[in-house]
Image 1: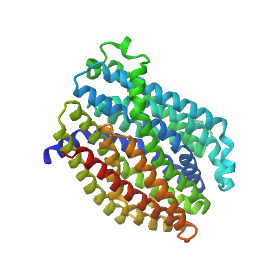
Image 2: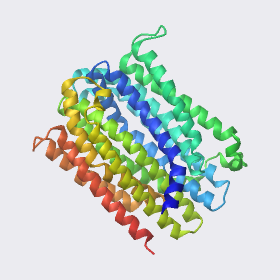
Image 3: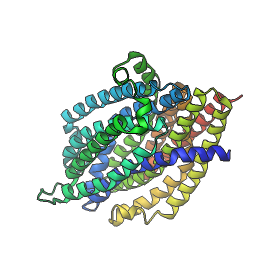
Amino acid sequence: MRHEIKETITLGWPIVLGNLTQMFLGVIDSAMVGSIHSSQLAAASFVNNLLTVPSILGIGITMAIAPLVAQARGNNDQDKPLEIAFNGFLLSGGLILLLAAIFHLGKNMVYIMGQDQVVADLAKPYLVWMSWSMLPMVLFLAVKQYADGLGLTRWPMYLGLAALPLNGVLNYVFIFGKAGLPRMELEGAGIATFITRVILFAIMAWMVLRQPAFAPYRAHLRRQLRWNSGRAREMARIGIPTALQFTMEAGAFAVSGLMAGWLGYIQQAAHQIVLLLASMTFMVSLGISAAGSIRVAHAEGQGDFARVRNIGYSTLLMAVVYGLLCAIFLFAGKHFLPALFNQEKEVLEWAAGLMILAGIFQISDATQAVGVGLLRGIQDVRRPTIYVAIAYWVVGIPFGYLFAFPLHFQVQGLWVGFILGLSSSALLLFFRFRNKVRA
């Protein structure tokens, strides 16, 4: 058990750090515009919630790349990994290109979704830039998944770390109108994010095609970099259910964000602050999940099913321990951490209460994230998709609405729904994995 945990940490810590840097791009945006006024933060929350489902659809397809690449590597097939990655790149990129165009053309939807007028006015231009920034983000993640599946997890991490100061500088210039540019506030944050993501993707693509570490896997580029219907079907078989899993989970959080807007922008801003913090802890869970997924896929490719079990249970143990640590962290920082994003007293009061609820679901959140990843690693995706649908859309959202509105718990009721949904998902996925790997 100790050996497997050590191996998962060795593979996973660069993935975790890379995930956190991607999350921090959004945190930087929210912190900088939140310092202007809570309405700016609420508008950012509104747009991010609108784009959650389309973003996650593309991201979910890319999540199939790493375990399939790892399995091919376990079978000592050096041509297949890049073929898988390229076809996943085309599938996810084509989908996001279509969705970005739809959201651009439908940008006036911000006025018909029950938000405050000031929030809708701020959100409209930000929506346009963030819609198009989904494309370089998903393309970067497709290439990143390829590198992760090969075990080359440090390259994306280095790029992610470099992106943080770049995004911070660009935000400062565009948001506050420096270097001769007009003050653009929230729209400026969208422009800065778009530019940062384009640069990230361009450099990552160049590394894969030029760096020596990737050379053994690009020996036959003419054949590898072309559409392959067989590889595309393989990607779709894993990627589409994975995308649906992530979409249903993220969609539940997005819907809760929209419902928070019905309670006014004060509660919506508090909700967004705590959701950002909870999302940061989730990025670590997602990194642990990705590492576990890659390792069980590689072990399955080698035909070592006893090791699949050992990797799986050790990774689940890591998730439980990590969830406990996160709960303690969020409880202890319930007053200090939200104040990093906003200084309005009423927003901070609501956020402090939500931090307690966010801490409660940390173990379930980490466990369900790892459970999904382990099952994806052994290519079991259909049943988990059903479980996720039940947990979030039969349990989480209906109970969240019940507690928030008919029972008058306000925004805290939405988070009670999160707790119930995440706990249901964690239990269902754990028992599914145990049944699949039982000797």
